[in-house]
Amino acid sequence: MRPSREDATLLAWFALFSAGTWIRFHNAMLYPSKWGFDAPFNWQYIERLLTTLALPTPESGWASGHPPLFYYAAAGLVRLLGPPSPRAAIIAIRLVSSAAGIGTAALAAWLVRRVDHGKTIRAMLAAALVLFLPAHIMMSAALSEEILASFLASLAIAGAAAALASRHHGRAELLHAGGVGVAAGLAWLTKLSGVLAVPAALAGELVDGWRRRDFRAAAWRCLVLGVAALGVGGWFYARNLWLYGYIYPHDLNVHKIMYTMPPGERRALDYLRFPVATFTDSQLLNPDLLRSVWGSTYATLWFDGHRHFLPTEDVAVRRTGTLLLVLALVPSTAFFAGLVRACRRVWRGGGSADVPLLSLVALTVAGYAVFTWSNPYFAALKGTYLLIAVLPFAFYASEELARWTRPPGMRALAVWLALAALALAVGAVFSFGVVFTRTEPPGLQWLHQEWRP
View 1 (cartoon, rainbow, N blue to C red):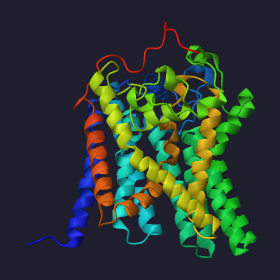
View 2: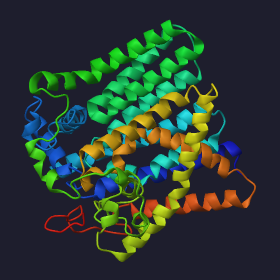
View 3: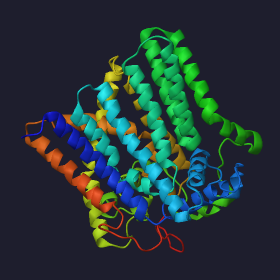
View 4: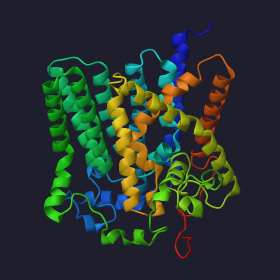
């Protein structure tokens, strides 16, 4: 007896999320506990909260100036589990963080189905783009706030976009705006870049109010959303300003080792270069990548350009990077094509749900450009910083990919083959120890070397 179409669809959903979940569970269990960006310092912060709940001073540790939600939540989880070993505690935190990452993939699929009714293939593609994004997989394995911040920002933007796609008047709108504000405020309280969800959501409300000529209702929604976000997330930054004279710490003495990292300066041309080395030697100390902001970002979004996961000096790793980064051009190109299509919709007076999504992309890219200009060091170039906008990426890339894979035709077959090869390769390469095993300490060795200016 052949399975029904509904049964086949359910089986496909189960297989998709099972694969993404298995990769993250595997990595949570096997990835060394103190590896990953800032993981040792993040654990020091969590350990401190196990003895005192007082907020640390920004100068007291590498991570102690970060917004506190992730650290308090992690410490609360460790307290709930009792006094396990540090490794067991870190595994537990990783598993919960991975669950939040799986939740982001589910949000992407939910938003597609809410806005583009009945497009099951597109919804699956949106979820897969999150589940098999290397930067998302690597940060799920790390002891870091990135995945939680990404989930909370995605929750806020998904809520804002869904409300604009099916606007109903009444008191429920204010409650919904308050909920979006709370989610955005929590993202802000997890990571500074989480604040970008606030103006992105507000932009959607303002444009909607202007189009409907209903500024009064839009103003009330914006007020409720903004007050909720400020109340939940803004207090930490107001406290910093009151106690230390700045909203967010920068150029602290505890971070002074950063100032010795190459290249040490940033030029306007660095934002225009996209060298061949992005594909042929995807590690950020390559002299060409060292001077390319977007090449380095691409190499860390779709591969391990910082070598925190994969061996550094390995020809097979370099060739695998070339393969993955070339295949990743398919969803990356689809994303930009989807952005253009969405901008046209908005320009022509439609696409209300697009406004917060497009706004988040624009604000994230602008914020990243300012951050990398102010921090001209190779370690500051991380595609993981863009995970705040992973929901719009999955939403727009899936829209175009669904068009490209629509049968019949050779184009559809070629795109499906490229996506399947990319997913299989990412799943194998970024399941720690399955294909490659890094044994040396994580990261690129940059000290005591000379750099080409």
